[in-house]
Image (cartoon, rainbow, N blue to C red; front, side, top):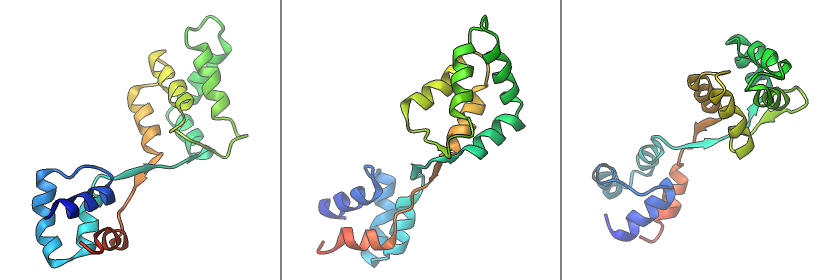
Length: 148
């Protein structure tokens, strides 16, 4: 694999290639199996998407978290009162979806963990709902390797 080919594939992958990647990709590159190259570059790639509010509400309700938040938000003396009130506001039905890439959304939900209103595993599960595979296409591989 030439340095130019490696740079093109790293651009396509969105990350530096490891020595294992290079070893696996080199025979595919020689064979110009762009579909297999794209599949290998796609392993572990993700992108963030907005999560429908109904899915967030369903998770919070089915795991008993919604009612914990409601109780904490109603208790002015509760140390997590503000975080609970903010989370209820974010998870209100007036929004179509939640964008977990926004820093304030992450802050609100991580504050719930810090206040003991939600487990870290629940935060991780909610965040995982916003991550989907970001597959490289064989067309993007072909285009990136044109002329190399």
